Image (tube, rainbow, N blue to C red):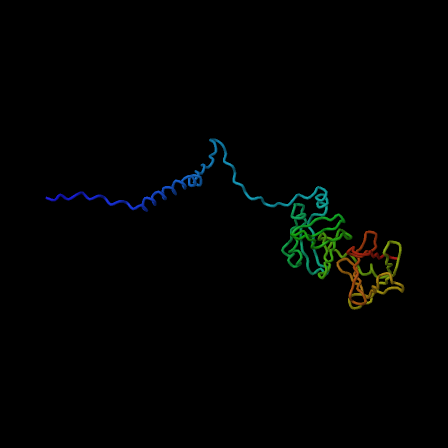
Length: 273
């Protein structure tokens, strides 16, 4: 009887063994790198028993820098309830100059009626100037209006292309500061007090733009300015040129004379002979 022999197992291909060895080598090399990149995250610090947890940080908020002591003292002299008005008196604006700090100077509070004066919407602060004037400032620190000090506690500003504005206590603006009869007559014009260079005569003859004003012969020291008419405006004397392209505004002084305002360029005084 034929006895069948046991089948020998088939031999494993050589390439299979080589593949196993390669995979094992890759795993062995990757383990150190994996162990370094997967470092354990330390647990969050826990406050000790009884200790207060640190307060959360809040972003810093910009606050106005306190003004210098000398500037604040000057601001306190000028602060208060005032009225801003156009030269023709048709637009008035109650406001308050405060002494609390604001960007660039001190805070200023406008009444709702101030919207009728456009530049007030650009004004965010005010500050006294070393010259004695009051400056209205924008958010960028730019001067919106400069009010120079006049007579009777009033201030005035000339805005190019906009006109003249007055800033004063309500009682001052309500008064009729000047009467026409106070102006009619002769006045000497001078660059320096006591040294006349010209004479004007203010008349009560009506002409376009107000009343007539004439200049005496030899008034060449005024740079070619020849007066034609005068009128009162907001407590000032306004003289218009014969050419119609210029004017000079005078504000009353404490000594009874008048001086050109704003105080820019060469001074011009007007005094009785």
